[in-house]
Amino acid sequence: MIVPGRVRWAEILRYVGRPLIWLLMWDVVVTVVYLHTRGSLTFPGLPLSLLGSVIAIYLSFRNAAAYARWWEARTLWGAMVNHSRSFAREIRLLLPEGLPGLTEELVRRHIAYVHALRLHLRREPPWDELARRLAPGEVLRLKGVANVPNAIMNRTAEIIATQTGLDSIRLATVTRTMSELSNAQGGMERIKNTPFPNQYSAYPVFFTHAFCFLMPVGLVGSLGVYTPLGSTAAGFLLLALLKVGDDMQSPFSNTENDVPINALARAIEIDLLDCINEPHALKPVAVESGVLW
Image 1 (tube, helix red, strand yellow):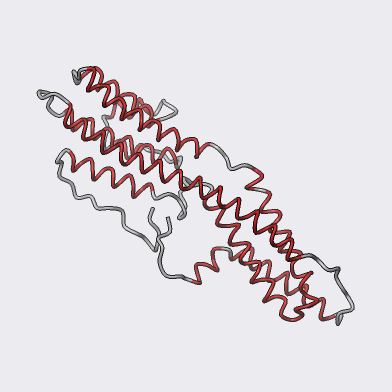
Image 2 (image 1 turned 135 degrees about the vertical axis):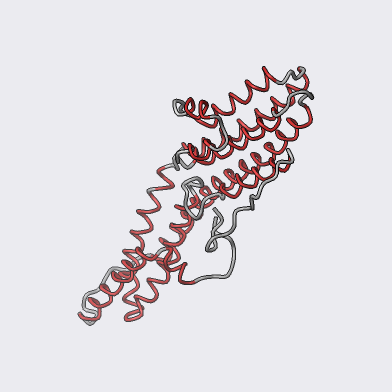
């Protein structure tokens, strides 16, 4: 996630740099041809204001839908943070005495689950993270399952049900919290595995580039030598809107525009270790070059 701050024009230009360069070159070509022919080569009038308004409205609807996906992903991770704290608190308070080390084991298992989920959403291997938190035999077993975080959660539920001796009321309390964790994971996987509709992903790209292609043709008769300036400035706005929607539609794609799940997973780990009074030297994830990962 890009952290809000001062405007950096170099980054803004780099954001849509390649298509903007092609647009500028095309603007120059149209202007040179028009001036070389001294206006004898005329182009039909184009309703650019009407076409531009339609494109802008289309991009606005599309970007609103893309942001809704991003915000839902952030909301689900917020729920993961809250329910993880509740899970650790319930394990610490509800487990009966006489079970040395089990509370710490279950909390550490949940930390492993959160990191496995983070890597699962980004389709990265979780084995280095899990090797530091789970037994070697379980890590080996997990290599044979399709959904690693879900398998970790299932094993945690099995341990709670068979080894803690919780009565039905306390067990129902913990089970309810684990169900909320599973619901949050399911929502994240739905966002990850459901592609953005083609009408909102491919069509805006075609329409925006087609409009940028036609724009200097319609402007050169009135702007003349200033066509590259006017056409490129207007094209920059549309291309930037197009790029914003592209970035927001995939909140778990491991780019600088993602939901900062590294930072959220680290925050969960710190909170849970503090809950069981386990000493650690972990710090919140720091912002790197204006980006929180």
